[in-house]
Length: 89
Image (tube, rainbow, N blue to C red; front, side, top):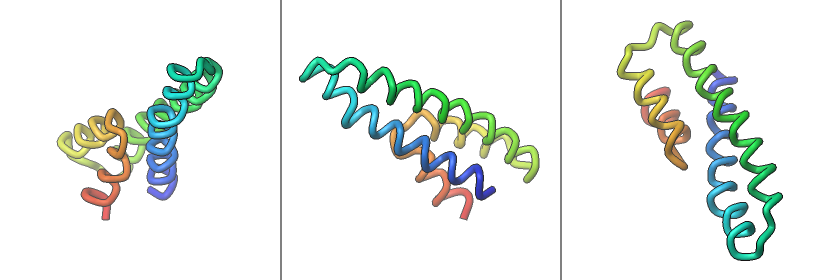
């Protein structure tokens, strides 16, 4: 569970970094590499989050509803943090 929560936190931070820092750097100042590398890191963390969501869910025998909310959380900027606080504690 600790690994899942850590990946969720890192995924949320990478998503916020991509949206709030890297994208303005690209579209305002023309620094394409900011999105390239931040986007790549976020993609790896997103895939890791989804895989660990299913692995953790199977281990703890989560309901479909919990899987569903966990996946939806991965699509929202603060989603993994909210999912952790609301459903896992």
